[in-house]
Length: 138
Length: 141
Image 1 (tube, one colour):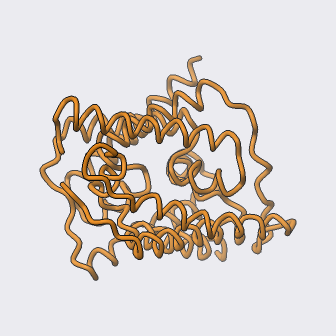
Image 2 (cartoon, one colour; image 1 turned 90 degrees about the vertical axis):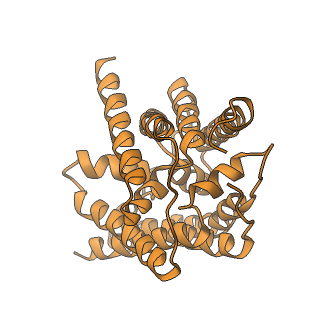
Image 3 (tube, chains in turn blue, red; image 1 turned 90 degrees about the horizontal axis):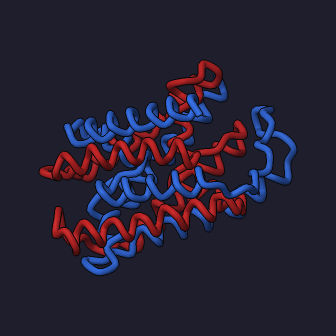
């Protein structure tokens, strides 16, 4: 039960952060990616501030051997850089640049209840399933 | 559609996101990568509880902020771009094992080389895509 409460708190903070930062507004995201046009640097500051907190935050957590609720901490990240990582990230970036949504903001926009958010999230889920099915076959 | 540079709210919101990621790691040892949390929430019975709680909190808090500030959603965006964008984001984040939060925030915070490569890849692709769509094809600016 406690784990669910902590996860909910983290989610609330995350969703609030997305909304406050303006990252739930796809126009701000696309304008960050539009170097040749109406450039809006805001996203860079969002990432910068997030890392300014998370870098020391993660380092602090790492010094402990367990999470507060007793869970193990994740293993150190793998180091291999392969085609799937690069190719998948590139495809993600293309999709991001087409509509201005990545998974977090897309979900957050469901709170608006508009067809746009629903269409994007549905397509996102479909794309994810397609990748999963293809991966299972190879 | 032009948007304003909003440095203070960007910094404040970003800090909240960083805090959220740290909270999740510190309390239950999990990575706040939204694509992974979402995929696993739907597909893995194990850990479904915390994942759904996290995602519900995300949507609720954003919704509360929208209501408080009277934020209006985008409308009139070409639906083919929404569909194609969604498909590629879903496909690509699965294949690449992460997104802007998973690789861009959590991965970089862990000093992961893989995440650095992923970030470079999706950022380059994002910049290139917007350039092509808005300035070469003249669509949806």
